[in-house]
Length: 122
Image (tube, rainbow, N blue to C red; front, side, top):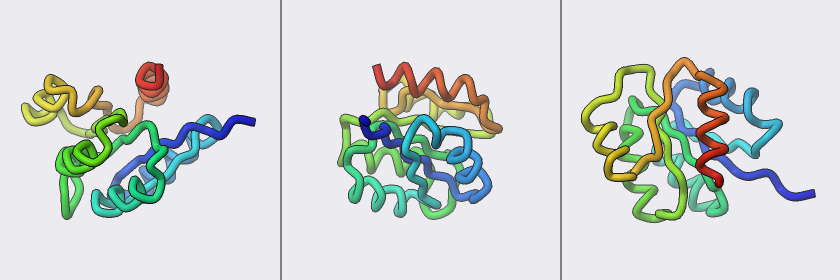
């Protein structure tokens, strides 16, 4: 049996981490982190993670700050921002510069997330 592809989801709201894990753990191995610092630690321990999704608005470090730091260390991974707000110029710039593949909406649009993850893994 082939091991499941690993996905990291970073969000400061525990309910979002739980929901994401419940929705996607049958298909992927889901790792979670409560903030960007924890996210970097998870990446260090599991460098075989393929996809990283991060909430935008978090204490300590924003989602984009986390992704910028993670991308410097792990440029081969696919990164997504998840936000409950409209895309800011900062987020659009991250898409244009290919720092992130795309930004995704909160509350989760499950089919959109499934499609984007599948596309990113091709």
